[in-house]
Length: 132
Image (cartoon, rainbow, N blue to C red; front, side, top):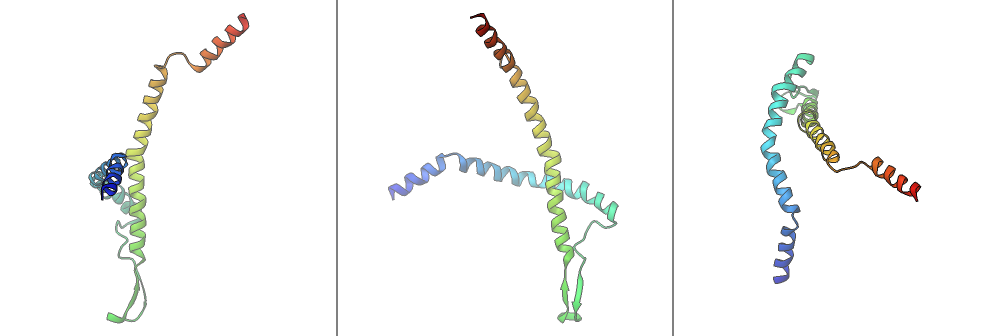
């Protein structure tokens, strides 16, 4: 039992569990924001283009009537695919692109604070070797 406890403590102490837990909680908290962007912005745009915002009612009846009817509801599949694409698009446009721009801006600021550039250092080495 002591070995199990030590292994479990090592597993928790790695940090991956904590980072994953934070990611799951933030993802759950962020989901309503993305959902609001999809339902409030992207779905009305699709409704304006195609004339209807909800494709879940689209279906094909293969045979029969009443209870014995065979129906293929392809609209549900279209709706799920569109929701996935819209969520991915919203995340990319409103989270990934701004984050990448922020990272690029802070990376160039950090590089400029590091001192002489690589080109300057190489020129300095060249001058020292030439003077020998």
